[in-house]
Image (tube, rainbow, N blue to C red; front, side, top):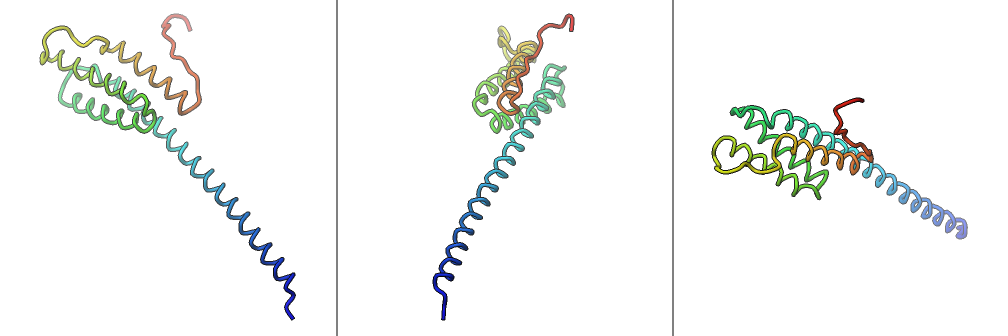
Length: 153
């Protein structure tokens, strides 16, 4: 004879165990996915900082063909990485990089009149320092201010 209360209890216990295991697995998958997303976001943030530093290194060198191509390559890279890491800053970064390109064209003699304002090395350095500060806060939860003082440590 079948012990129906025992069979029912076993099936209910298996059902509850399966339900609990599913919830735990779902939570673990979500935690792993979130951790991977954060890891990728931080890696992308580091790549953006490196691209900015590389851009600043070559942006105001003498204009030769290789420097121009490298500046354009880094410009595209900065825009792509900004879109991924700091989408709210994309518009201002694009406008500033466009201004730097206009500054170079003016320096080459393609435009007449005064050069675009706020696109020189100091202004660009300040702009990117602010962007990197924002990046450190948003992505890395670090609050760092760049020192403007070049005097005593």
